[in-house]
Length: 482
Image (tube, rainbow, N blue to C red; front, side, top):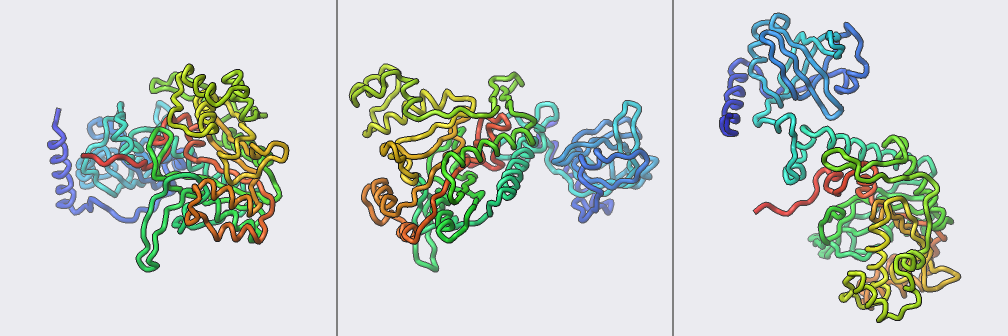
């Protein structure tokens, strides 16, 4: 078994040999007739084809060689014979390795085993790989390598490539879905003078020319609502948000969020929109409404059933169901009951915080199929409209699937005085944290509206069966190596 240093030395020698033979090891433009999967799909016996890809397999049969070339879309078999390419080009070919990129021109034929194959007439070296690829049958198994060197994961692991192909298709389909319903895609600032629209710790920076501190946005909500004031009836943004908080299998400090607002709608209409959209994504991209999650051995661990209609239940009723008698208990009795259930609530000062912890542990984390949790306490959602029949709750939903929140939806608060009071309470009375321009915009009149947020990373996790957010973010943030 050769050491890695010996393998690197051999490849360097082949690099030098290519240069000595007059072959550029890092070629330039090469026009193809399409990607590898496209060429396979359009395979015509006897047709001439130009293709390019990375060599990912090689079966040496003396003067005859069968190879696989691959790109992100798939793989294709090629056949090269010394006599057909000529002695000079065959000598060049002998300096190639698995991992190298090549351009090919040849003729389509089908082998005796029925495999579509390209018979090589000529080839060009496009890029010499100076490092060996991960071992074929095991790919990249180490999680650290998968996330830190995503390019190796994408080369070696078809499952990873498929997840990211699905993610790309999901985002594209979301845009099309909303645009087909009259929503306008807009862009709002990523750097903001006041971080608003959510309760989260922001990243802070400084703009030298303006001489002012700025924050990477934690949400685009307050700017999108300004557009409602300005007369935009339906808007959405697929945006990057940044929160300087913990990292876990469900959290990354930089993440993708969809936010959409619909004038004259409410939270129930937004719930219908989200339900229709998620089912559309599942059926068109994932093959159906039953989503299987599997372990590393390919065994199904759970199945999420997205069949409509989705369950809806009030927040208080769900807590009462999880902890019978909760509504009739005193504050002290609730805390004691939490202790009996193994829930540590000692660091929560307010009753609504205790109830929320109970909800997260006994309701949210145990809900696998879609559940719309409605009418949450007003303290949890300062930007939502108060319910007309019960002033302790707001007209919202929280969509839970696979044990985590996928989407909140509101009947948006458009009373500027109530909004000021709510934000003031949230900020602890620190007026410098209030977005006065947003509050001023509300005083010009914002139409009643429904609004939603959807965590795209979590949505993709649910639809593709990924168990970690790092599996659906191409380049997740990692702790620096020592």
